[in-house]
Amino acid sequence: MFGDLKHNSFFTVLKTRMHGQLVGEDQYGNRYYRRTAGRGRWRDEERWVVFSRQNEPTEVPPGWVGWLHKRFELPPSERPLPAPSWEKERLPIMTGTDHAYRPAGSLERGGKRAPATGDYEAWTP
Image (cartoon, rainbow, N blue to C red; front, top):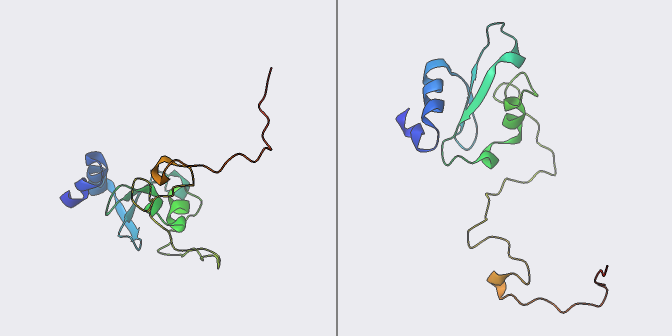
């Protein structure tokens, strides 16, 4: 439980410990919880995620995102979302790393841009 404090807020961990009903876990180790409301309707329940690593929303798979936003009644642990044939494996965010995208002309690539082609006309009032 206290290991979760490294990547989640104290109140999330406390709420999970007191009221959370474990629903499932994804391939990244994130655990998903719910707290049913008084009327017992699935749209009224509270849903949240406890991250296993850094608090990174892009590490929540699409099926779990749909469940968290109450688009689906049943979680992917009970009814998996079929993956489209064109879907690729998720890549982590590379901003701030050596693998970040740096287009031609950016300062990290020397700041040299291709010369203008002449198709640009400046606006004059």
